[in-house]
Amino acid sequence: MNNLETADCGNINASQDLPVKVDRPCGSVNKLEPAQQGSARHSDGFLLSVAIDQTTEGVIITDLQGIITYVNPAFETISGYTRSELIGRALNLFQSVEHEMSSHRQMWETIRAGKVWRGRTTNQRKDGGYYIVDATITPVRDSDGEITHYISLQRDVTREVQLEEQYRQSQKMEVLGQLTAGIAHDFNNVLTAINGYAELIQTQLDSDHPVHEMASKLLRAGRRGADLVRQLLVFSRKQVNQPQVLNLNAIISELETMLQRTIGERIQLNTNLSRDLWPIKADPAQIEQVILNLVVNARDAMPYGGRLSIETANVVLDEHYVSTHFEAHPGDHVVLSIGDTGVGMTPEVKAHLFEPFFTTKGPGKGTGLGLATVYGIVKQHSGSIWVYSEPGVGSTFKIYLPRFQEAGQSVAYGEVTESVRGGRETILLVEDDASVRDLTGLILRRHGYTVLSACNGGEALHLVKEYTGEVDLLLTDVVLPDINVTTLVKQLKRFHPRLKALYMSGYSYDVIEPHVPVFDRSMFLQKPFSSTILARRVRNILDAPNAPITSDELGAPANTRYRAQRPRGRTWHRLPRRPIVHPVLRMPPEAPLP
Image 1 (cartoon, rainbow, N blue to C red):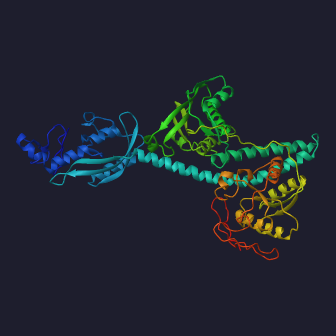
Image 2 (cartoon, rainbow, N blue to C red):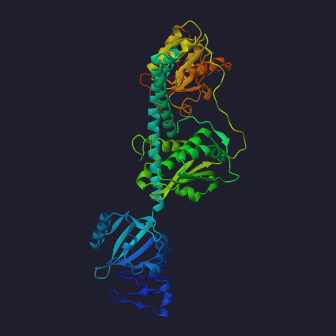
Image 3 (cartoon, rainbow, N blue to C red):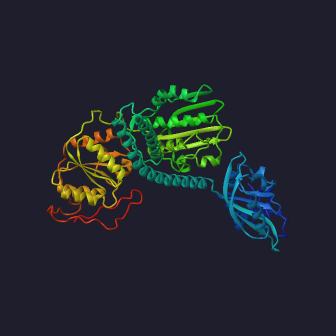
């Protein structure tokens, strides 16, 4: 080990194994006599030498021309070079294309002027990889004040920079998801009206009527729009999924024939599915969509043919892996790998890969939602996705889904398949969007129901007070402009204790439920909906048995003493003049009871 002794001039004898002492003008070095070594080992210089060799920070000393005269073991570890490979070499050995020349020149101008330079540099390791250091370079002066060497202290921050970049990317995707969810919610209201009226027109016309085909085309276009909205909701993790305990291998095996047709004859499909693969709990339709989207993306990256590989395996993500992958979680996972030998991607493309509407394909050849949908589905299943790609080499997508630890059967979700019938009950419809309100009321009246329509909570309460008959069902949008829907339901049940409720929203149930935790999934209707689905859900709710009436349902808040119902003839509800609005749902807080 090369040790160094402090001296006024800061010179280092890198070729000697013994401590050195400078007691003559700079550059004149004497070897210590053996008798002096005992005391030297206890000197401050010897301790400094040992400390520099054992520190975890990289230390490198050069002469005025940038020729390396000393490096410590930590710098060997950082750079990948040995000390013997570095002594006598120039600093530009580490210079990478990632480091700007202007910054390099500014560094030399600073230290040659006798000043301390601090900054972050990207350098190249011996194996060709890059590493990032926070460096401090200080001029070393002799007893006459002349600069003789430069000493650089370097801290490897490569891992920190990678984690910071992953965190920024995660935050960016989260913001995009919130924006997308809001747009999708408003667009769902528009599509509900378009698709609903198109469906009504189509059912009222004979098939040979000239307008019938126009209505059909309008309905098809509206449904395509609804599909786009669903993809946006998947990206933003605001779409309802239907999880089942499943084996990923089974899904891939079932899709294999279709995937081969999708990629064509020029591309060779290879599958390597691990035996005894752990089960996962996921929505099979969404997992199929992930696989199909990634396969289509791989196909488009290989226009002249190539190889596509699909692999599965059991993996355990340890703390070390998680520490370098911001969104990963430790534990047992099933990994799905889909790789291709296509054109690959540049770092600039990878930085925007999962953003909605980002595409490298030509006009008309892609919506830019394929990989955004994949990202949303993976995150919704508490998984993580990582991409490895180089231009001209190909790309590999690795998806990690958590292992399902409990034995159980597949969970089945689905709509009731009984025929739709109408009824004679009275329904209170509360919807602030006029087009959706008019359409929904028209559909319900066509099925024989009496409909009381209101644009907000205040109007709904007024209608109920004036209506002399029984109100059987409240069909309401979750987000109302003037009152929290939970408060509205409580106050309506003061007049009609047996009132049932069906909630609808352009947001998904998973978004609504934390803010209105008073209903389950069976009481929720996702916009846009068809007239058939609306009629079926309304009928199901009306035919369901009545739940026992509680004091809360009669209007008493959970944390207050129950107060008797007030007479109908009195004005008992006051709406807040300026409700506080939830930043995402635009939902006012629960209003106080009178």
